[in-house]
Image (cartoon, rainbow, N blue to C red; front, side, top):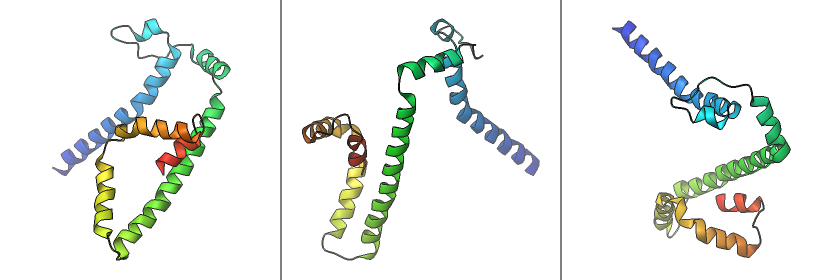
Length: 144
């Protein structure tokens, strides 16, 4: 029985690994083949020979290194700030006793239940009126 359980567990792990890695493989296949190869039914699963040409085209058209740097900067700042502010709020809600604490906890939980798409238009209007349109602050500050 344990041998069967081990085999089933290993098969599940291999399947999970395949499902996790396949999108990255598919990204290389799509990037290295033309539109006609990708739109075939069934699609081609073998990478083509155009990958380095496509990468060179991307770097000539888009400032890709700048985009990667911006992504790293925004992701790092938002992650660190989220951990910091969440730790402060968690400590305050767990250890401190103050008037309105129960309401504040319910308010925070309630706002977490709302879909983020509801705030896109008001957030855009706010960001535009503050003058942060097309800046990294427009990505960082609302995430805090």
